[in-house]
Image (tube, rainbow, N blue to C red; front, side):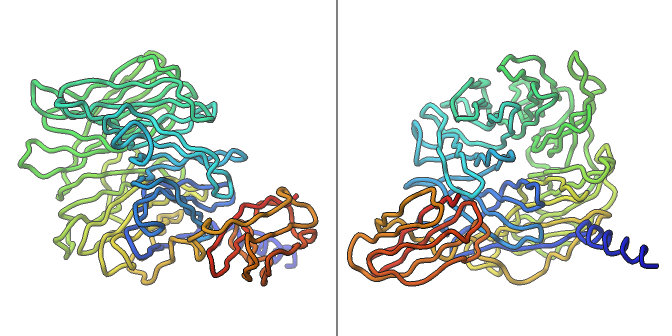
Length: 488
Protein backbone atom coordinates (compact mmCIF):
# COMPACT_ATOMS: atom_id res chain seq x y z
CA UNK A 1 0.00 0.00 0.00
CA UNK A 2 2.80 2.44 0.86
CA UNK A 3 4.39 1.76 -2.51
CA UNK A 4 1.11 2.53 -4.26
CA UNK A 5 0.74 5.78 -2.32
CA UNK A 6 4.27 6.83 -3.26
CA UNK A 7 3.58 6.07 -6.91
CA UNK A 8 0.40 8.14 -6.73
CA UNK A 9 2.28 11.11 -5.30
CA UNK A 10 4.86 10.83 -8.07
CA UNK A 11 2.35 10.68 -10.89
CA UNK A 12 -0.41 12.97 -9.66
CA UNK A 13 1.60 16.20 -10.22
CA UNK A 14 2.55 14.98 -13.69
CA UNK A 15 -1.06 14.21 -14.56
CA UNK A 16 -2.22 17.53 -13.14
CA UNK A 17 0.32 19.52 -15.12
CA UNK A 18 -0.58 17.57 -18.26
CA UNK A 19 -4.17 18.75 -18.04
CA UNK A 20 -3.49 22.48 -18.02
CA UNK A 21 -6.07 24.56 -19.89
CA UNK A 22 -6.89 28.21 -19.36
CA UNK A 23 -8.07 31.46 -20.92
CA UNK A 24 -6.33 34.75 -20.00
CA UNK A 25 -6.67 38.42 -21.01
CA UNK A 26 -3.93 41.09 -20.88
CA UNK A 27 -4.67 44.79 -21.30
CA UNK A 28 -3.60 48.32 -20.41
CA UNK A 29 -4.78 51.83 -21.29
CA UNK A 30 -4.31 51.68 -25.08
CA UNK A 31 -4.38 49.06 -27.83
CA UNK A 32 -2.58 45.81 -27.01
CA UNK A 33 -2.39 43.23 -29.80
CA UNK A 34 -0.93 39.70 -29.45
CA UNK A 35 0.35 38.04 -32.63
CA UNK A 36 3.12 35.51 -31.97
CA UNK A 37 4.00 33.03 -29.25
CA UNK A 38 6.69 30.49 -28.36
CA UNK A 39 6.95 27.95 -25.54
CA UNK A 40 10.12 27.68 -23.42
CA UNK A 41 11.65 24.59 -21.79
CA UNK A 42 9.95 25.21 -18.43
CA UNK A 43 6.52 25.38 -20.14
CA UNK A 44 6.34 29.17 -19.82
CA UNK A 45 5.48 31.25 -22.89
CA UNK A 46 6.70 34.45 -24.53
CA UNK A 47 4.17 36.54 -26.48
CA UNK A 48 5.06 38.97 -29.27
CA UNK A 49 2.84 41.81 -30.41
CA UNK A 50 2.39 45.56 -30.62
CA UNK A 51 1.12 47.95 -27.99
CA UNK A 52 0.33 51.62 -27.51
CA UNK A 53 0.35 51.25 -23.73
CA UNK A 54 4.10 51.57 -23.20
CA UNK A 55 4.59 54.96 -24.91
CA UNK A 56 2.58 57.50 -26.90
CA UNK A 57 3.10 55.46 -30.07
CA UNK A 58 2.99 51.79 -30.96
CA UNK A 59 5.88 49.62 -29.80
CA UNK A 60 6.78 46.01 -30.50
CA UNK A 61 6.89 44.05 -27.26
CA UNK A 62 7.67 40.71 -25.65
CA UNK A 63 5.82 39.42 -22.59
CA UNK A 64 6.71 36.35 -20.51
CA UNK A 65 3.96 34.38 -18.77
CA UNK A 66 4.31 31.18 -16.77
CA UNK A 67 2.72 27.82 -17.60
CA UNK A 68 -0.62 29.02 -16.17
CA UNK A 69 -0.62 32.35 -17.97
CA UNK A 70 0.55 34.51 -15.05
CA UNK A 71 2.58 37.47 -16.29
CA UNK A 72 6.23 37.62 -15.21
CA UNK A 73 7.72 40.49 -17.23
CA UNK A 74 7.31 42.55 -20.38
CA UNK A 75 9.57 44.85 -22.39
CA UNK A 76 9.03 47.08 -25.42
CA UNK A 77 11.21 47.89 -28.41
CA UNK A 78 11.20 50.59 -31.05
CA UNK A 79 11.74 54.26 -31.81
CA UNK A 80 9.74 57.44 -32.19
CA UNK A 81 7.24 56.10 -34.73
CA UNK A 82 5.47 52.72 -34.78
CA UNK A 83 6.63 49.12 -34.55
CA UNK A 84 4.67 45.90 -35.02
CA UNK A 85 5.81 42.67 -33.36
CA UNK A 86 4.60 39.70 -35.39
CA UNK A 87 6.64 36.65 -34.37
CA UNK A 88 9.04 35.58 -31.61
CA UNK A 89 11.74 32.95 -32.22
CA UNK A 90 13.65 31.27 -29.39
CA UNK A 91 16.65 29.05 -28.77
CA UNK A 92 17.92 27.95 -25.37
CA UNK A 93 21.08 29.80 -24.24
CA UNK A 94 20.69 32.18 -27.18
CA UNK A 95 17.59 34.19 -26.38
CA UNK A 96 14.92 35.60 -28.64
CA UNK A 97 14.41 37.16 -32.04
CA UNK A 98 11.49 39.59 -32.09
CA UNK A 99 10.38 39.82 -35.73
CA UNK A 100 8.09 42.47 -37.18
CA UNK A 101 8.16 45.75 -39.06
CA UNK A 102 9.02 49.34 -38.16
CA UNK A 103 8.73 52.85 -39.55
CA UNK A 104 11.08 54.30 -36.93
CA UNK A 105 14.12 52.70 -38.53
CA UNK A 106 15.22 51.76 -42.02
CA UNK A 107 15.11 53.19 -45.51
CA UNK A 108 11.62 54.68 -45.34
CA UNK A 109 7.98 53.87 -44.65
CA UNK A 110 7.81 50.42 -43.00
CA UNK A 111 10.76 48.00 -43.13
CA UNK A 112 11.27 44.51 -41.76
CA UNK A 113 12.46 44.81 -38.14
CA UNK A 114 14.52 42.25 -36.20
CA UNK A 115 15.45 42.64 -32.53
CA UNK A 116 17.83 40.32 -30.66
CA UNK A 117 16.65 40.01 -27.06
CA UNK A 118 18.42 38.13 -24.27
CA UNK A 119 16.79 35.57 -21.97
CA UNK A 120 15.87 38.31 -19.49
CA UNK A 121 14.01 40.42 -22.05
CA UNK A 122 16.69 43.06 -22.75
CA UNK A 123 17.59 44.24 -26.23
CA UNK A 124 21.08 43.38 -27.48
CA UNK A 125 20.77 44.81 -30.99
CA UNK A 126 18.24 45.54 -33.72
CA UNK A 127 18.30 45.80 -37.49
CA UNK A 128 15.94 46.73 -40.33
CA UNK A 129 15.62 45.43 -43.89
CA UNK A 130 14.08 47.24 -46.84
CA UNK A 131 14.77 49.68 -49.66
CA UNK A 132 12.44 52.65 -49.23
CA UNK A 133 9.24 50.92 -50.26
CA UNK A 134 6.69 49.64 -47.77
CA UNK A 135 7.79 46.22 -46.41
CA UNK A 136 5.50 44.36 -44.00
CA UNK A 137 6.44 41.12 -42.24
CA UNK A 138 3.95 38.26 -41.89
CA UNK A 139 5.94 35.27 -40.58
CA UNK A 140 9.43 34.12 -39.59
CA UNK A 141 11.35 30.96 -38.68
CA UNK A 142 14.61 30.15 -36.90
CA UNK A 143 17.22 28.56 -39.17
CA UNK A 144 19.70 25.81 -38.31
CA UNK A 145 22.56 28.32 -37.82
CA UNK A 146 20.39 30.38 -35.40
CA UNK A 147 19.68 32.96 -38.06
CA UNK A 148 16.22 33.94 -39.28
CA UNK A 149 14.11 33.72 -42.42
CA UNK A 150 11.67 36.63 -42.61
CA UNK A 151 8.78 36.67 -45.11
CA UNK A 152 6.07 39.15 -46.05
CA UNK A 153 5.30 41.71 -48.72
CA UNK A 154 6.84 44.74 -50.42
CA UNK A 155 5.06 47.52 -52.27
CA UNK A 156 5.99 47.63 -55.94
CA UNK A 157 4.89 51.05 -57.16
CA UNK A 158 1.78 50.85 -59.32
CA UNK A 159 2.11 47.07 -59.70
CA UNK A 160 0.77 46.20 -56.25
CA UNK A 161 2.74 44.15 -53.72
CA UNK A 162 5.39 41.46 -54.18
CA UNK A 163 6.60 38.66 -51.93
CA UNK A 164 9.65 39.77 -49.97
CA UNK A 165 12.08 37.36 -48.24
CA UNK A 166 15.11 38.11 -46.05
CA UNK A 167 17.61 35.56 -44.71
CA UNK A 168 19.88 36.71 -41.86
CA UNK A 169 22.63 35.16 -39.78
CA UNK A 170 22.56 35.05 -35.98
CA UNK A 171 23.99 38.59 -35.81
CA UNK A 172 21.26 40.05 -37.99
CA UNK A 173 23.52 40.51 -41.01
CA UNK A 174 21.80 39.91 -44.36
CA UNK A 175 22.80 36.71 -46.17
CA UNK A 176 20.34 37.20 -49.04
CA UNK A 177 17.07 38.85 -49.96
CA UNK A 178 14.49 38.04 -52.63
CA UNK A 179 11.72 40.10 -54.14
CA UNK A 180 9.44 37.86 -56.24
CA UNK A 181 8.15 40.42 -58.70
CA UNK A 182 4.78 39.96 -60.37
CA UNK A 183 2.01 42.36 -61.52
CA UNK A 184 -0.86 42.44 -59.02
CA UNK A 185 -0.94 41.84 -55.28
CA UNK A 186 1.21 38.95 -54.00
CA UNK A 187 2.08 38.18 -50.39
CA UNK A 188 4.19 35.62 -48.52
CA UNK A 189 2.11 34.71 -45.47
CA UNK A 190 3.92 31.76 -43.91
CA UNK A 191 7.22 29.84 -43.78
CA UNK A 192 8.46 26.55 -42.37
CA UNK A 193 11.75 24.61 -42.55
CA UNK A 194 12.23 20.99 -43.64
CA UNK A 195 15.35 18.87 -43.01
CA UNK A 196 17.29 21.94 -41.83
CA UNK A 197 18.13 23.33 -45.27
CA UNK A 198 14.84 23.57 -47.19
CA UNK A 199 12.53 26.56 -46.78
CA UNK A 200 8.84 26.29 -47.73
CA UNK A 201 7.19 29.68 -48.24
CA UNK A 202 3.43 29.85 -48.72
CA UNK A 203 1.22 32.70 -49.80
CA UNK A 204 -0.95 34.06 -52.57
CA UNK A 205 -0.01 35.10 -56.11
CA UNK A 206 -2.11 37.12 -58.53
CA UNK A 207 -2.75 35.74 -62.02
CA UNK A 208 -3.76 38.16 -64.74
CA UNK A 209 -5.48 35.52 -66.87
CA UNK A 210 -8.13 34.93 -64.21
CA UNK A 211 -7.74 38.28 -62.41
CA UNK A 212 -7.67 36.28 -59.17
CA UNK A 213 -5.20 35.35 -56.46
CA UNK A 214 -4.24 31.69 -56.08
CA UNK A 215 -2.38 29.70 -53.44
CA UNK A 216 1.28 29.02 -54.03
CA UNK A 217 4.16 27.32 -52.18
CA UNK A 218 7.84 27.88 -53.00
CA UNK A 219 10.60 25.44 -52.15
CA UNK A 220 13.84 27.37 -51.56
CA UNK A 221 17.25 26.16 -50.45
CA UNK A 222 18.67 27.79 -47.35
CA UNK A 223 21.29 29.47 -49.57
CA UNK A 224 18.54 31.29 -51.51
CA UNK A 225 18.37 29.02 -54.57
CA UNK A 226 14.82 28.60 -55.90
CA UNK A 227 14.18 24.86 -56.26
CA UNK A 228 10.51 24.21 -56.98
CA UNK A 229 7.06 25.82 -57.06
CA UNK A 230 3.72 24.28 -56.20
CA UNK A 231 0.90 26.06 -58.03
CA UNK A 232 -2.80 25.85 -57.20
CA UNK A 233 -3.69 27.84 -60.28
CA UNK A 234 -5.87 25.12 -61.82
CA UNK A 235 -8.38 25.23 -58.95
CA UNK A 236 -11.37 27.49 -59.70
CA UNK A 237 -11.99 30.58 -57.60
CA UNK A 238 -9.84 32.94 -55.56
CA UNK A 239 -7.55 31.71 -52.78
CA UNK A 240 -5.54 33.19 -49.95
CA UNK A 241 -3.11 30.98 -48.04
CA UNK A 242 -2.51 31.97 -44.40
CA UNK A 243 -0.66 29.26 -42.48
CA UNK A 244 1.70 26.44 -43.46
CA UNK A 245 3.31 23.65 -41.42
CA UNK A 246 5.48 20.71 -42.32
CA UNK A 247 4.29 17.67 -40.38
CA UNK A 248 6.44 14.62 -40.93
CA UNK A 249 6.99 14.44 -44.70
CA UNK A 250 3.86 16.39 -45.56
CA UNK A 251 3.41 20.11 -46.11
CA UNK A 252 -0.05 21.31 -45.13
CA UNK A 253 -1.52 24.79 -45.39
CA UNK A 254 -4.77 26.45 -44.41
CA UNK A 255 -6.46 29.45 -45.98
CA UNK A 256 -9.63 30.75 -47.54
CA UNK A 257 -11.46 30.39 -50.85
CA UNK A 258 -14.29 32.10 -52.67
CA UNK A 259 -15.64 31.69 -56.19
CA UNK A 260 -15.88 35.43 -56.90
CA UNK A 261 -15.40 38.79 -55.26
CA UNK A 262 -19.07 38.99 -54.24
CA UNK A 263 -19.07 35.56 -52.55
CA UNK A 264 -18.36 34.65 -48.95
CA UNK A 265 -15.06 33.05 -48.05
CA UNK A 266 -15.09 29.41 -47.02
CA UNK A 267 -11.98 27.75 -45.66
CA UNK A 268 -9.66 25.62 -47.72
CA UNK A 269 -6.62 23.48 -47.07
CA UNK A 270 -3.73 22.38 -49.18
CA UNK A 271 -1.67 19.23 -48.86
CA UNK A 272 1.34 17.70 -50.59
CA UNK A 273 3.81 14.96 -49.75
CA UNK A 274 7.46 15.98 -49.85
CA UNK A 275 10.01 13.93 -51.78
CA UNK A 276 13.62 14.44 -52.78
CA UNK A 277 12.36 15.56 -56.19
CA UNK A 278 9.78 18.02 -54.89
CA UNK A 279 6.02 17.80 -54.39
CA UNK A 280 3.75 14.79 -54.94
CA UNK A 281 0.14 13.82 -54.20
CA UNK A 282 -0.95 17.44 -54.45
CA UNK A 283 -4.47 18.23 -53.26
CA UNK A 284 -6.62 21.22 -52.42
CA UNK A 285 -9.98 20.94 -50.62
CA UNK A 286 -12.64 23.54 -49.92
CA UNK A 287 -14.99 23.30 -46.95
CA UNK A 288 -18.75 23.25 -46.93
CA UNK A 289 -19.05 24.88 -43.48
CA UNK A 290 -21.13 28.06 -43.57
CA UNK A 291 -19.46 31.35 -42.68
CA UNK A 292 -17.24 34.04 -44.14
CA UNK A 293 -13.86 32.60 -43.14
CA UNK A 294 -10.44 34.19 -43.36
CA UNK A 295 -7.37 34.73 -41.21
CA UNK A 296 -7.10 30.99 -40.58
CA UNK A 297 -4.31 29.36 -38.55
CA UNK A 298 -3.84 25.78 -37.39
CA UNK A 299 -1.63 23.41 -35.40
CA UNK A 300 -1.24 19.71 -34.89
CA UNK A 301 -1.37 18.35 -31.36
CA UNK A 302 -0.99 15.15 -29.39
CA UNK A 303 0.21 12.34 -31.64
CA UNK A 304 -0.15 14.49 -34.82
CA UNK A 305 -3.35 12.68 -35.86
CA UNK A 306 -5.59 15.73 -35.43
CA UNK A 307 -5.58 19.45 -36.08
CA UNK A 308 -6.91 22.47 -34.25
CA UNK A 309 -7.96 25.26 -36.62
CA UNK A 310 -8.72 28.83 -35.53
CA UNK A 311 -10.76 30.85 -38.00
CA UNK A 312 -11.91 34.44 -38.00
CA UNK A 313 -15.34 34.87 -39.52
CA UNK A 314 -17.88 37.60 -40.12
CA UNK A 315 -20.61 34.99 -39.77
CA UNK A 316 -19.76 32.41 -37.14
CA UNK A 317 -22.67 29.93 -37.02
CA UNK A 318 -25.05 30.56 -34.09
CA UNK A 319 -23.14 33.67 -32.98
CA UNK A 320 -25.32 36.54 -31.67
CA UNK A 321 -22.73 39.15 -32.69
CA UNK A 322 -22.94 40.96 -36.00
CA UNK A 323 -20.13 43.54 -35.69
CA UNK A 324 -16.62 42.54 -36.72
CA UNK A 325 -15.12 39.08 -36.72
CA UNK A 326 -15.50 36.30 -34.19
CA UNK A 327 -13.13 33.37 -33.73
CA UNK A 328 -14.21 29.76 -34.10
CA UNK A 329 -11.85 27.02 -32.93
CA UNK A 330 -12.51 23.83 -34.83
CA UNK A 331 -11.28 20.28 -34.69
CA UNK A 332 -10.19 18.40 -37.80
CA UNK A 333 -8.50 15.15 -38.72
CA UNK A 334 -5.10 14.63 -40.35
CA UNK A 335 -6.46 15.99 -43.63
CA UNK A 336 -8.06 18.92 -41.75
CA UNK A 337 -11.53 17.72 -42.64
CA UNK A 338 -13.92 19.43 -40.26
CA UNK A 339 -15.13 17.28 -37.34
CA UNK A 340 -16.69 19.74 -34.92
CA UNK A 341 -16.41 23.20 -33.36
CA UNK A 342 -14.89 23.10 -29.89
CA UNK A 343 -15.34 26.75 -28.87
CA UNK A 344 -15.73 30.41 -29.77
CA UNK A 345 -14.34 33.82 -28.86
CA UNK A 346 -17.19 36.24 -29.54
CA UNK A 347 -17.53 39.96 -28.87
CA UNK A 348 -19.32 42.87 -30.50
CA UNK A 349 -16.08 44.22 -31.99
CA UNK A 350 -13.49 42.28 -34.02
CA UNK A 351 -11.73 39.28 -32.47
CA UNK A 352 -8.53 38.39 -34.32
CA UNK A 353 -6.46 35.22 -34.06
CA UNK A 354 -2.67 35.26 -34.12
CA UNK A 355 -0.35 32.26 -33.97
CA UNK A 356 -1.47 28.73 -33.06
CA UNK A 357 1.20 26.35 -31.67
CA UNK A 358 1.29 22.84 -30.26
CA UNK A 359 2.49 22.63 -26.65
CA UNK A 360 4.81 20.19 -24.94
CA UNK A 361 2.01 18.59 -22.89
CA UNK A 362 0.16 17.42 -25.99
CA UNK A 363 -2.23 20.38 -26.12
CA UNK A 364 -2.22 23.66 -28.05
CA UNK A 365 -2.02 27.42 -27.48
CA UNK A 366 -3.67 30.24 -29.46
CA UNK A 367 -2.74 33.91 -29.08
CA UNK A 368 -4.69 36.83 -30.51
CA UNK A 369 -6.53 39.99 -29.55
CA UNK A 370 -9.99 41.39 -28.84
CA UNK A 371 -11.07 44.92 -29.79
CA UNK A 372 -14.24 45.08 -27.71
CA UNK A 373 -14.36 48.07 -25.28
CA UNK A 374 -16.08 45.76 -22.79
CA UNK A 375 -12.85 43.76 -22.31
CA UNK A 376 -9.77 45.48 -20.87
CA UNK A 377 -8.98 49.18 -20.54
CA UNK A 378 -7.90 50.19 -24.03
CA UNK A 379 -8.65 49.61 -27.68
CA UNK A 380 -7.25 46.10 -27.78
CA UNK A 381 -6.83 43.22 -25.35
CA UNK A 382 -4.46 40.27 -25.78
CA UNK A 383 -5.84 36.81 -25.14
CA UNK A 384 -4.23 33.43 -24.54
CA UNK A 385 -6.26 30.28 -25.10
CA UNK A 386 -4.58 27.14 -23.77
CA UNK A 387 -6.21 23.87 -24.80
CA UNK A 388 -5.21 20.89 -22.69
CA UNK A 389 -4.50 17.40 -23.95
CA UNK A 390 -7.56 15.25 -24.42
CA UNK A 391 -9.32 18.21 -26.10
CA UNK A 392 -9.75 20.01 -22.76
CA UNK A 393 -11.14 23.37 -23.94
CA UNK A 394 -11.48 26.18 -21.33
CA UNK A 395 -14.34 28.63 -20.97
CA UNK A 396 -13.62 31.88 -22.81
CA UNK A 397 -15.96 34.19 -20.93
CA UNK A 398 -13.65 34.60 -17.94
CA UNK A 399 -13.54 38.16 -16.59
CA UNK A 400 -10.57 40.23 -15.50
CA UNK A 401 -7.20 40.85 -17.08
CA UNK A 402 -3.53 41.35 -16.26
CA UNK A 403 -1.51 44.47 -17.06
CA UNK A 404 0.79 44.42 -20.08
CA UNK A 405 3.08 47.23 -18.89
CA UNK A 406 5.43 46.69 -15.96
CA UNK A 407 4.75 48.77 -12.84
CA UNK A 408 7.80 51.02 -13.19
CA UNK A 409 7.95 51.63 -16.92
CA UNK A 410 8.95 55.30 -17.23
CA UNK A 411 12.67 54.96 -16.76
CA UNK A 412 16.06 56.32 -17.89
CA UNK A 413 15.06 59.92 -17.19
CA UNK A 414 17.60 59.86 -14.32
CA UNK A 415 21.32 59.24 -14.74
CA UNK A 416 22.45 56.80 -12.07
CA UNK A 417 25.96 55.38 -11.81
CA UNK A 418 26.03 51.70 -10.86
CA UNK A 419 29.23 49.65 -10.48
CA UNK A 420 30.74 47.09 -10.64
CA UNK A 421 28.62 45.28 -13.20
CA UNK A 422 28.90 42.29 -13.11
CA UNK A 423 28.88 42.38 -9.31
CA UNK A 424 29.91 39.78 -6.77
CA UNK A 425 29.62 40.94 -3.15
CA UNK A 426 28.73 44.63 -3.44
CA UNK A 427 26.93 46.98 -5.81
CA UNK A 428 27.64 50.72 -5.52
CA UNK A 429 24.82 53.12 -6.48
CA UNK A 430 25.42 56.85 -6.94
CA UNK A 431 22.80 59.48 -7.80
CA UNK A 432 23.74 62.49 -9.95
CA UNK A 433 22.74 64.97 -7.21
CA UNK A 434 22.16 64.96 -3.47
CA UNK A 435 18.54 63.92 -4.02
CA UNK A 436 16.95 61.29 -1.81
CA UNK A 437 15.21 58.39 -3.45
CA UNK A 438 14.28 54.73 -3.31
CA UNK A 439 15.72 51.62 -4.92
CA UNK A 440 14.27 48.23 -5.77
CA UNK A 441 16.16 45.16 -6.99
CA UNK A 442 14.07 42.47 -8.73
CA UNK A 443 14.95 39.14 -10.29
CA UNK A 444 13.87 38.09 -13.79
CA UNK A 445 10.64 36.63 -12.40
CA UNK A 446 9.63 40.06 -11.11
CA UNK A 447 10.20 39.23 -7.42
CA UNK A 448 11.61 42.05 -5.25
CA UNK A 449 14.75 40.74 -3.52
CA UNK A 450 15.99 44.02 -2.01
CA UNK A 451 14.43 47.45 -1.54
CA UNK A 452 14.98 50.58 0.53
CA UNK A 453 15.90 54.27 0.53
CA UNK A 454 19.01 55.96 -0.84
CA UNK A 455 20.59 59.35 -0.14
CA UNK A 456 22.98 60.37 -2.93
CA UNK A 457 24.96 57.10 -2.79
CA UNK A 458 25.11 53.72 -1.12
CA UNK A 459 26.70 50.27 -1.29
CA UNK A 460 24.30 47.35 -1.56
CA UNK A 461 25.33 43.87 -0.41
CA UNK A 462 24.71 41.20 -3.07
CA UNK A 463 26.70 38.31 -1.59
CA UNK A 464 23.58 36.42 -0.48
CA UNK A 465 21.85 36.60 -3.86
CA UNK A 466 21.94 33.76 -6.43
CA UNK A 467 23.89 34.37 -9.60
CA UNK A 468 21.80 35.74 -12.44
CA UNK A 469 20.32 38.83 -14.06
CA UNK A 470 18.49 41.45 -11.99
CA UNK A 471 16.77 44.82 -12.54
CA UNK A 472 17.76 47.77 -10.36
CA UNK A 473 15.13 50.51 -10.34
CA UNK A 474 15.95 53.86 -8.75
CA UNK A 475 13.44 56.69 -8.34
CA UNK A 476 13.80 60.26 -7.06
CA UNK A 477 11.74 63.41 -7.41
CA UNK A 478 13.73 64.22 -10.55
CA UNK A 479 13.12 60.98 -12.44
CA UNK A 480 13.56 57.23 -12.62
CA UNK A 481 16.22 54.86 -13.91
CA UNK A 482 16.48 51.15 -14.51
CA UNK A 483 19.69 49.18 -14.89
CA UNK A 484 20.32 45.59 -15.90
CA UNK A 485 22.61 44.03 -13.28
CA UNK A 486 24.50 40.75 -13.52
CA UNK A 487 25.43 39.11 -10.22
CA UNK A 488 28.10 36.45 -10.36
